[in-house]
Length: 363
Image (cartoon, rainbow, N blue to C red; front, side):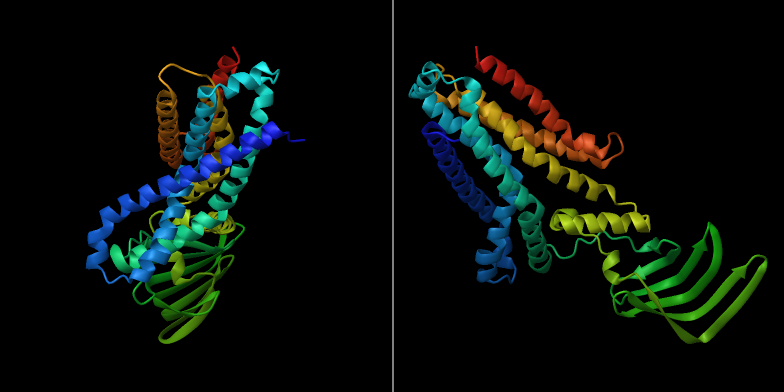
């Protein structure tokens, strides 16, 4: 049961947090607009797209990036005010233990945790996807990093496709090859000098100058044609050759899971960045609880110098968390650490720091 004291602290927490979000959103918009105003003028982007699509999606990206840090700043701000007004001392002198005092903070953190969880798994990726489309259409153009030379794909558990080059302009491939492998043995091999995507899902590919070899033990059968074309259906589309920079951040979690599953089946080499993104979305929301504990412990004491020192400590801790999170993402993208351990490393470090601060706050 939540008491009046709990609702009092929860109200202060929510009001301060959303006020902090508002302030940081306005500052972020002003900074971003000042940096991009020349690009806005030089491009043909409509004002309506800037006002109603670009900046809303930009704010979703910024809030998704800074949500835990904003939580820490809000906790330190209003808790420090309460400490300066001797409210925290009065509450503790009334017989309320420090752990009991943490209850409304953790309830509020739980609410923000749920908001962040929904945002980071669904809302923020959708916003990133639209922001990326606007950026490619009006500003930087295509930043497609998808591989087009010497490409290997497993389009089915026993079907492998290889091509020496794929043209994204006309969806055509050169030196196209389809291998059917059963029990580690090649049972058929289809070669074509060129192949072109026609339509459909799964896709229809039209092979030109083709030959089909089938193997049955030591026996081989050859079917070849240098004048006719052959249509074949493959689980492969031109979109599979597209890999935009930071594309993983523009996929909702169900789409991300599907992409990981598809890349594993195809033996693609860029699967780790998707696994890092999935692990990040799981680990970062829990940081809200950790930073809330640190904020209460740091700001719950009345200190000489006022709230400025506490806010400075809070901003430093938040910046340190952001730095460690980015460092963990970079480290996990390699092979030095398992993805799960690498992405949870900031939480482990900050949880140890939270226990230290809570232990000292009760003295």
